[in-house]
Length: 201
Image 1 (cartoon, rainbow, N blue to C red):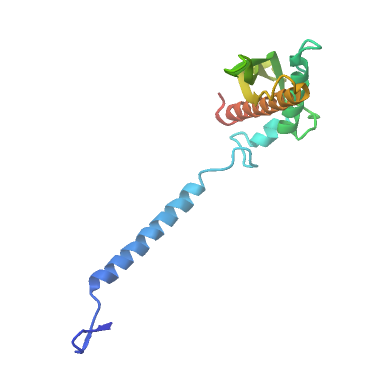
Image 2: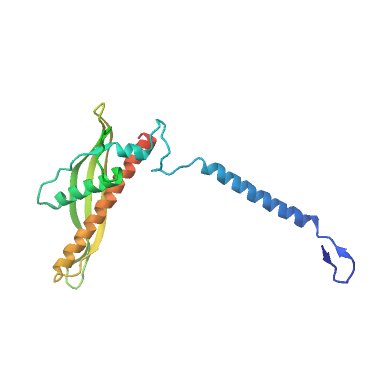
């Protein structure tokens, strides 16, 4: 309660204020309740939660055998082929090969190259490039030898060219961009596989 300005008797706070506070409390309770209910409907994509048939996405990843990626020796694609397979083995199986694989992942049509991003107007030479990698891939169920997923993916990474006199720096920048694109491509493939295992498409 509060005292009136004229020094008279106490004045009670209006019931409208109490009602407003009660409504706010009720609203907060409803929001928290809905949040708790909706949280129970979701789970991490790569978590340990089971799929319809009982295995988690992580379990499915651990049952994938990744074949060697074909690429002509001595070409930029040959290095990318090894790096991409290593990245996939690490991302899907934690660096180990499955002892009893249920699926086989085949990567094909690997293409790796560069594209010009920008031109130095003073010299007419490229001052930035784009590393580009693309592949097709299939997931085969080993027991039935049935291809259950067929798709393609690509990844790019940009790099700045430091100058024609800095040859080593340019090569190092190109290698770093190639590595970044390879990691992105491995993640793209992993995400596509996860989508298949969760949604079946």
